[in-house]
Length: 137
Image (cartoon, rainbow, N blue to C red):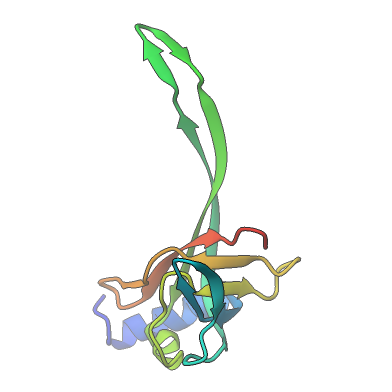
């Protein structure tokens, strides 16, 4: 399926209609010595995107001595990603940056995440980004 084809456009619309949810993008400016603050050059945007919060379990291993393992810990985590159809991403009006905030406005407690790095385009044309939960949210 080539991006720009009618089939791709139909597929993007079907996925967005079925799985997308409203989100609020709050652009932030951060510096090394200060907390992040709203970016006056970029506006807050309310839009829709597909959000995936996938539970994962990872092991954090300690020191090994022969066959003995000391300090093995299991961490329960949540992998968080967000996908934008091409038309939705371009309608935002600016490039998203690492550190910008995403608020899941339809979820209980309004969970807040930050972009962990700049979004990337896939070979299908959609735009994907990794998120991390905001500390002290």
